[in-house]
Image 1 (spheres, rainbow, N blue to C red):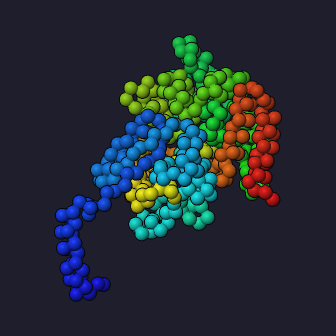
Image 2 (cartoon, rainbow, N blue to C red; image 1 turned 45 degrees about the horizontal axis):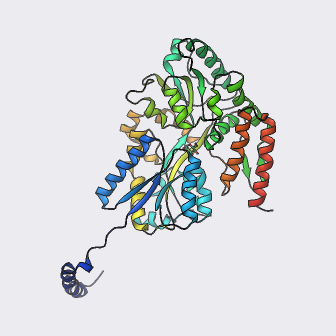
Image 3 (cartoon, protein in one colour; image 1 turned 120 degrees about the vertical axis):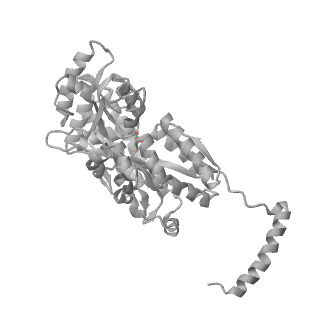
Amino acid sequence: MIPEKVLLMRSATIIPGLILCLLFVGCEPRQERRLTFAVGGAPAELEFWEELLGEFRRESGIEVELMRQPTDSDQRRQGLVIPLKAGQADPDVFLMDVVWLAQFAASRWLEPLGARMEESGLPEGVFFSRVIETADRHEGELVALPVYVDGGLLYYRRDLLEKYGLPGPPQTWDQLIDYSLEVQAEERNTNPDFFGFVWQGAQYEGLICNFQEIAASGGGGILVRDGEISIDTPPNRRALEFQRDLIHRHRISPPSTYTTMKEEEVREAFQRGNSLFERNWPYAWRLHQGEGSPVRDKVDLAPLPHFPAGTSVSTLGGWHVGISRQSDAKEESWKLLRYVVSYKTQKKLALRLGWNPGRRDLYEDSEMLAELPHFGRLRDVFDHLLPRPVLPYYTQVSSVIQRRLNAALSGQAPPQEALAAAEEQVRQIARRYQPE
Ligand code: GLC
């Protein structure tokens, strides 16, 4: 405690000082620095961020400029790596895909958050601990926090399943093919653009997510860890053959699958009424159910199908927020970060955009569960999400695998050859980054 006498002495010097300050322009109260916040996404998401930053500005008095990025995850990463590598102070705060965190942390681009969390009394325990441990902690230090958690889901047209007397969403991939063939044949009579199943097969990060889900639902997966690498395996071959066959043999997925189909292209095709099934992330729900959507009230959600002896698998996706170590306004940045992960903001993100919050405490929120009942219904899916390999050189690994998988989908290479080549190249990359 400070003795009263000292307080009196202090105020005796502070008060005249303040009066002097008010008289002289040089003593104006310190201006808060202007922040830059980099984020991308679908147009509705950017609109949301603009609004949110406006609210933050009004509440905190801190100016924030939105640096708009594209939707594609790979392009967003490049947009951040360039200024970060160049040592620039902007952007101060940014959103990161879960798969970049190992690289960003190892490059020391992220400001440690542990001490600030402790000081401000924000308990780590409100976030999903498995996600924090998999993604946000690097060498024991917390460097980011989850904004939302993504997992792959199967969207389906409830009305069409009923129309054709089908019992419910498919449990296995074979059922998905059968239902698609039946419904597609009929629907084509009136809609020549109709396909059974749309999913992300373009050469980009989303293809890895789709492939991993199918492969792991039959006992496969992408393993790259401490010298252990396995990509060209029988279940992975089956998964890639299956994906190729959806397009070329059964023809229930459009040829554009391997050229242009990313999240938004897939969502739009389904939303226009051109597909029975769709693989996408939770964000598509709000848009499908939005006003003016041709599939409004005709859609439902289910876990992804699996192979007969396997189980349903969803890839762990999602976006995390961090502060640049090079930021010249770290205090203000921390205030913004806290605002983004606050209960209030995360609830808005869920209600407006349908995103699955990174905070667990929101899953008990009755208003949220009433608006988004599938959050409760699909909780199991979100408890068992499968991460992609966690590596500082994940981007290199991913870009090799993307290219090889995509070559098999387009028919340029047989699946087995594509997987063998991917495995060989990944070995070379791993040797370069982790010499024995
Ligand atoms: C979503 C996921 C992200 C993933 C990306 C792939 O944005 O949240 O983790 O990498 O899709 O396209």
